[in-house]
Length: 95
Image (cartoon, rainbow, N blue to C red):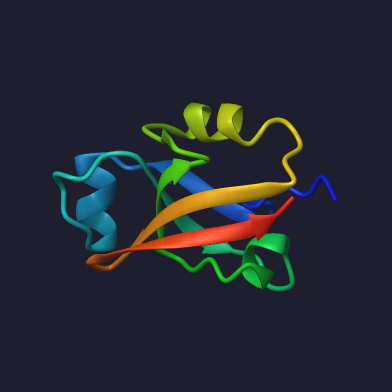
């Protein structure tokens, strides 16, 4: 209990330059996962490199600082919206 859903993931702000470098749409904003450590909570929850975190518990995420704030406290269940390619996935992760 008390696990953060993105523990073990490297998350960066998605700027036009970063998007261009990793092959994403440069008009997208928010945060993107650029690495997931093997055997980390983030890997066990199924997060992948290039997943874009759209929202946490209904709060839109526009920056790494907003993601940190949204995941700072314990939650019994994390309700996440993650864009993978052209799809937005609803991911529920136990806290």
